[in-house]
Image 1 (spheres, rainbow, N blue to C red):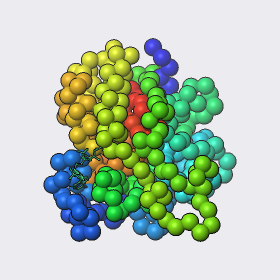
Image 2: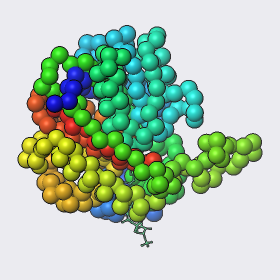
Image 3: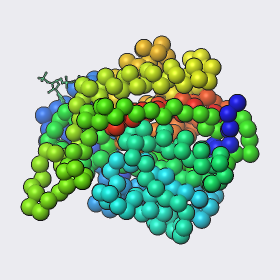
Image 4: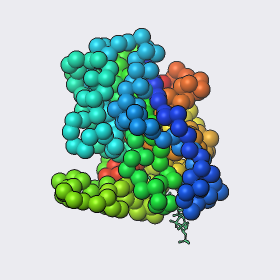
Length: 330
Ligand code: COA
């Protein structure tokens, strides 16, 4: 058996108060509740206010996770932040901003740029740092303010996303029977163009006099991403089960990236997994990219759905294109 000495000891989440329903969106956009629900399973999304920055939301989620565990910021050795919507374009990292908000003076802090798979990557990276003795307690946070990078006149993608944050305390384990057992972390860089934020990097930097145009916003080839996402989900779940000698019946929960109900249903059908094994909350929160899996886990915990000993698979997929999953015994 592999090392089992990192486990999620606490969870927290934060979503903005402002809740926008599909009906609300259809007042300014040529869309409707029936289309959005039937194509995505999304009913609402939460949208950040001026003050609710990516770092602020991550900080709130982290504070809740620390408080629940009776920890202070000084008990943390490292902050890993999964985000594609950092407060600042390249620097400083959102992790550093959260460290300062929490009041920790010196712990390591770094962002992970693996889009919607960021938290899945973060758990395994954190586990590695705990296993090799570098850290004993790590905050793994997913936080996103996607509302700021969307073209709200583009009905093909703005309907899909929302804002929010989730955080997990990953801790060294004195109990060998639980924890992040292992993970699959993968990427397919040949698909980089399918989902991107084209403008503003060093390849095409902002220049004086630039006028905001379509390439300032998130770009997505929806059909291509859909096909990739179904394939990624199917492969990761199959490979994770094989790697760990698990049958579908052994699994208590699958916590997927909450992109789109249709993607999950298609993958569930291919892998012959009953849909009720999947925890789905995109109806309320839409796709919150790197925040979606920790937000789902924290939401599940709040509802009393997570029990000691349960076997849980996570599965993420997104820009990069990245994909992966974790096998966790709760
Ligand atoms: N409301 C109403 N109609 C809409 C619409 C909306 N919000 N968005 C698109 N349409 C229309 C299209 O214009 C098109 O109309 P037309 O046939 O008259 O041209 C029709 O619906 C079908 O569009 P299409 O793009 O073929 O729909 P689709 O079934 O492929 O669904 C997505 C579109 C975006 C929902 C789907 O491609 C998808 O889920 N992709 C993956 C997205 C994702 O999850 N990304 C994040 C991954 S991390």
